[in-house]
Length: 259
Image (cartoon, rainbow, N blue to C red):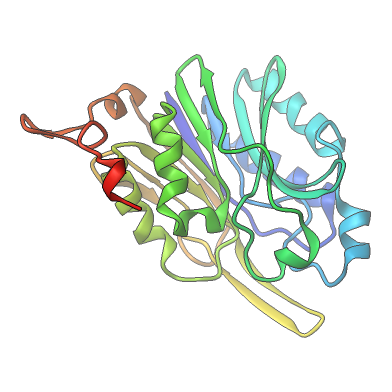
């Protein structure tokens, strides 16, 4: 399959422009699956709950409808992060394909001021079977909890899709470890740019990447510019969990000794 990581630079609150910019980037490369950043359509640095209420969308809102058009025209799949308006407000990621909405993940490990605006996710860590392989979803700060990727791997995910808005420097290299310890592919789609709003100043690190089960970084974008990169991957490579003839990463786990 052809896997695309998309790195954007959204302007806070400019939803239509941000979605159009992302579609333009995706249209420049052919891929089977495109991954966009966390909160790619709204921006990240909310000042108050009123902004969340104004910018959040239902799962089938305008952003979904625009990206659905793209998936149909390009016969592809897209994962993107957005502020979801449902029974409450969630920091969510949605997987869409030519046939419509496939699934949603609601972020479990909220970071920093997200805790002021969003409710902790209540859908667990979902895994979806697509024509090219099995895909699991998580968002940004979930990376720091190894249980997140391990749970997805145990559920059969061959590829973990990871929309992000990273401000800490450690994630890109840490995702290499997540791949090695679970023998999975990961794609971390981050944003770039700076948002200084309401006395909170955040700079996003970029470095969006695709990593193999052997810890090889196939692509890693820069830290300042938006862009898109594509890699050809065979997700079945994630099915081999053996380190050698005597060690299997998942089968050798001994849960009774861990807690």
